[in-house]
Image (cartoon, rainbow over all chains, first blue to last red; front, side, top):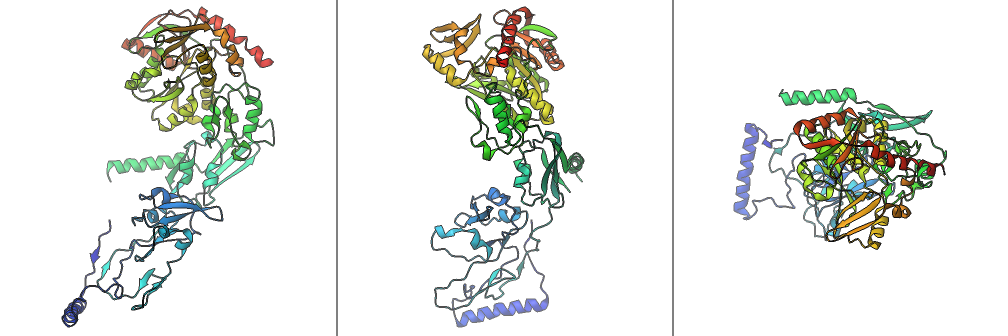
Length: 243
Length: 356
C-alpha cells in the first residue's frame, strides 16, 4: 500500500505557506465567504495515479476481456468493433472507480487520467462507448464563461490550477513487465483443437502440420502472460510459469 | 524467507522444468480426406448405426458442441467443427474390434455389502466407497435419477451423500457419464472412480490410451454386466403403454428373461424379448456382456438373490476387495461363472449383426 505523505518543506516554503494562509485570512476579512476553493474557478491539484476518467488505446488491446471479468460493479461490457475484435465500454452509472480494470490490463491499453468532473445529462449518456474512450472528453460549455479550461495532454487533467496543497503519491509506472509465460505441462494430452491459438491476441501460439504430426509452439518472447489460453484450454494442460 | 515462500518458489521452479513451449500431437487419419473429422465420425459410426452412445466424443469435444440426445449429433458441424480429430481419436467404435467373453478375470466372487442397501448386493457402491476410504480416489461418479426416472450424474465425494436412495438400483437408460468424468478429472486431487456399462468402460479406456491426463486421474473403473440399454424416450413411452406409473415406480429389474417394474402397489412383468423393437441400434452389435476392460465388473447374474457377482481383473480391484474383507464391510460367497456363459454367448451372436 502506498502511503500518502506530505513533502518535507524547507523554511522558505513554510514561510510562503504561512504567508499564503495569512493572505487567505486577509482576503476573507475584506471579501467574506471566500476561504474555500472556488471551484470551478480554482482547482485542486490532483495527485499522480488519481483514479479518474478511463482512457483506452485499441492498438494495445489484446482482447483478453480481463477488464470485463474483473469489474466488481459489472460496469464494463465488451462490444464488437468493425474489425471483429471486442473492446470495452464503460457504464459510468455503475463504475465505482476502483480501477481494477486498469490494474488488470495486461498491455496497459487502459489508463487513468486526472479528469474527474465529467457531467452527463441522462443515464443513457453514461454508457461510454469505446470511441469516446480513446481521446479525453471534449469540454462543452453552456454557461457564461468565468474561467477557461483546457485539457493538458501530458498530465491528462483539466487546467486552471492554483496550487493549494502539495499532496503527492510515489509514482508507480502503469505497467511493469509481467514475468510469466504460458507453457504446456502435458503435451501428450493435447487434443490439437487450436483454441489456444485462436484466442491468443499476441500471436504467440503457432501450429504446423507435417507428416501426420501437428507441431504446436509457444513463442515465449511474444507471450504477454495474459493467461487467456490457460483459461480456455479444454484439457487444462497449459499453465502460467515464471519466465 | 518463510518456509512457505521457499516451498512456493520450489514449486514454481519444478513447474518450469516440466513445462515446455513446444509439443507434438499425432493427427488421426481421415477416411474422408476433405471433410471435417466429425463428418468422418458421422459416416463411420453414427450413420452406420453402430454408435453406442457412450459419449466419449462429446466429453472431449473442445467446443462442447456435440449434442447428446437419443442420438449423438452436431448441428452445423461444417462451420462449427474445430476439426481437431479428438472425437475420432477416442471413439471406441471408429475402429471397432468387438470384445466379448470374460476378459482377464482372475476370480469370481459373490458379495453383499453390510453397509449399503442396493438392488442386489450393492457391491458397486461398496467398491467405490472403500476405494475412497483407502484414499485411492476422492470422487466417485454415480448415475442417479429424477422423479421421472431420467438419469442424472452425481459426484460423490463423501459416503454420506449415498443416503440419496436414487443412486442405487438399475435404470436401463443411458447416462451421460463421460462428460461428467471430464469435469471430475478437472476437480479431483487424488483420483476418480467411475461406474459404467461396457461401452462406457471402453470409452474410458480409449481416453486413457490417448490422453495421459485420464491415465493419471481415473484410478478405478467398475463395469456393469449389461445385455442392453435403452433410450429414455423409447423405454418411458413403452412402460407407460404397459401401465407403469413413474411416480409410484420403485425398482426395475431383469431376471430370468423377464422385465419387472415394481411399483408401490403393483408389478408389471413382461418378456425382455418384447423390448427388442425399441433396442438401440448400437446395442444390437455389442458383444461385451461383462465389461471386459474394467478393473472389476459387477452384476447380479451368477449369484443367489441378494448377492452381486464380482468379476475381478486388475490388481487394484483385488486390493480393494482385500480391504473390504479386512474391515468386514461385506459378506462373501461362491459365485457361479457358468450362469454368465449363457448371456455372454447370447451377446456374442450379435457380432453377426455387425457383419450385416
